Length: 280
Image (cartoon, rainbow, N blue to C red; front, side, top):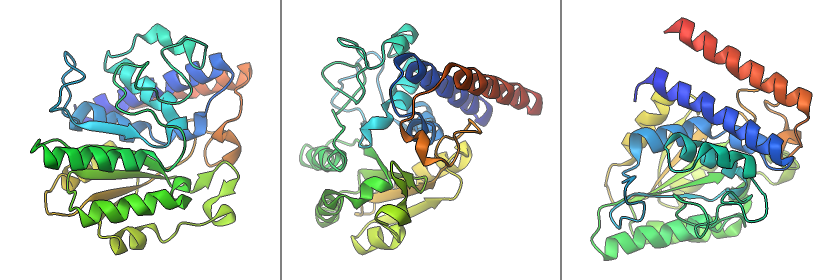
């Protein structure tokens, strides 16, 4: 897909995030909005997926390690036709296909259940190692929050991935510089992120604008290089991206959305879409 098509899908995903979180009166809007373009490019231009066989042993795998941001993933799966759009109204409801964190036993298209931060990468490392053992040519992607890097398990898994030369493992870091209690510096800074991953044997790629679909796609393709090293792409993003009053505010990590806020946010996204159509 081209830039205009990807940006259109991203805008629709943002609407889905707001719709599901507002309707549930629960969920993580800011953390979801920051990863929209990353997931859009990944699912529409990068991942090797068979929509007729979502469990194909030859498919690429994706694990959302920062599982609280699952409204963004649900939005993308809706746009891919894997989840029905009306399911968005059932986010976090008892018995729903869309729980508050990814559940591989409930939701189509989910490769791993996540939620406890730090654990998704270990599952991804295991999948990447399995591919090597089975001589299968698939890549494993996992998306982590920058605050999540404060978990020690991240670095244990990274050390193992480098030691086993898992060049089919690609980490994606949502570097929006905010977590639930404030900035990374205020809580427990994992910086310098690039230097740390280099020290652990990773090839590092930095995307200065983690909302530029062209730059995101370029980074993904660069990371597919099989050179014996696991890869990490650090995306500089904006928490709450796309909704002006949510952007760069830690409070929107999990704040409830009021009716007037929901209507204002949707209006902004619709105006963004009109502006994008005019710029074509």
